Amino acid sequence: MKKILIYLMLSLLIFNPVHTFADLAEGDMIVTLGENLTTSQKETLLSEMGAPEDVQIVTVSNQEEHQYLGKYVSKALIGTKAISSSAITIQPKGAGISVKTKNINWVTDEMYVNALITAGVKDAKVYITAPITVSGTAALTGIIKAYEISADTTIPEEVKQAANQEMVETAKLGDSIGDKNAAALIAKVKEEIAKNKPKNDQELQKIIEQAANDLNVTLTDEEMKRLMDFFNKLKDLNIDWNQVSDQLNKAKDRISKFLQSEEGQGFLDKLKQFFIWLIDAIKAIFS
Image 1 (cartoon, rainbow, N blue to C red):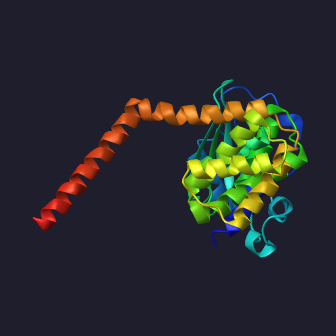
Image 2 (cartoon, rainbow, N blue to C red; image 1 turned 45 degrees about the vertical axis):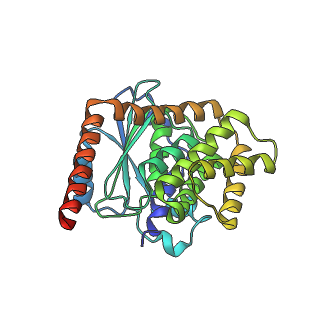
Image 3 (cartoon, rainbow, N blue to C red; image 1 turned 60 degrees about the vertical axis):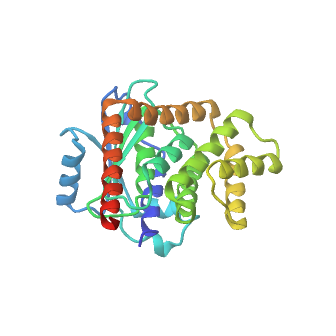
């Protein structure tokens, strides 16, 4: 079941947007809703998102999901209903991308950030949700659709496809080496490609191997082959690698700032106290 939602998010990337919703300003929101949601579910999700009454809404169909995910997963896994939904809020220039999810159990926040950076999305706050627990991949299509409309821009079809493929590949890799490691590995490789632009397969493979070594993970031959194929495709696309590097740095900065903040320090203190309590409890058992 968890594979089924891969498609749900990835497929929201599909159409060339209608530009009548352009000229959204900082703080404005645009929402995407799965077309198979009930009226009650739509109302609940809009309330959950904090959407204003006049919010612009883009509908995402199951057909779109199949269009963008059909190359990477089976039709049976994509399913027959579109329910994953998302909200994108325009942020100040230079703010970077932030992602928050609810009822998403396969695609992580970091995976969304990575795929959106590949697609060229920047300076946006993204919220992804569903009325039931889903894998979350279909929402990616809607987010990119909404971004195109809000920014009055058209993302090339091949770049949308690459973002969808990245989402799937990262999620699959996460099943093997862990979600955090998978997202970190993809980000590390993209960052290195942005800096040094490998000229051949040998240089690209070295970058991937170094990223894996840095994370202390082992890739199978099949995983290495899939990553080589994906990154070879990615580096040959018309992608603004300077923007990719900039957005990746902002994503890292946001994590660092959180850890240094009062909220972050409070979290670390609570975590420290928990382990102190756990050690004392274990000592008490054996004393």
